[in-house]
Length: 185
Image (cartoon, rainbow, N blue to C red; front, side, top):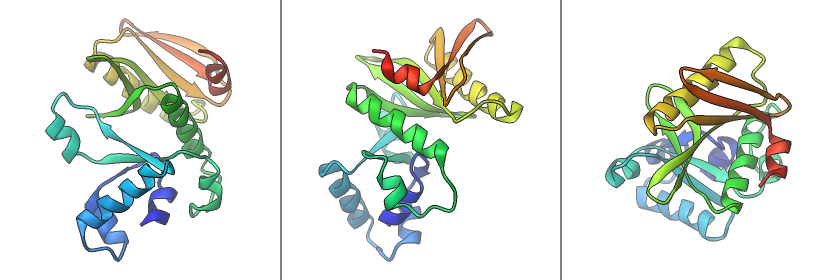
């Protein structure tokens, strides 16, 4: 189960999926193992944002590790998985900065929405590159959906090396290299 979670960082999971991929038959035992990982600061999870706590708790969560080196040493890899590692790195930085972190998923998905006080204040996508029109469309569509849903004027797409700004449907999308974002406040 742990190998599966580490190999699928930044993807949603459910307890029923974890039950299928492991020999653990008890959902409470699966929950205990995930809590053990969180309690010793090896991993963390985020929920899909909803104004209903009940809906948050029954939706799938996303799993992240708190040290990117685990993605090389523990996870099963058959490729570089640079996109997962980059998203995990951004997650770690959000944790370090003390944000309350969620993800958004309706028709499209937005990697991170950050809650400060009583409302969502930021929406962020993370991808290695947006050179492909298909990737760019997916990232922009997910971000725009989150911006509309939470009534935000500006969103952020973090990439490995691109920098740009897009104005679309009355919204501003800033595209920034992750290294530059990490150096900012």
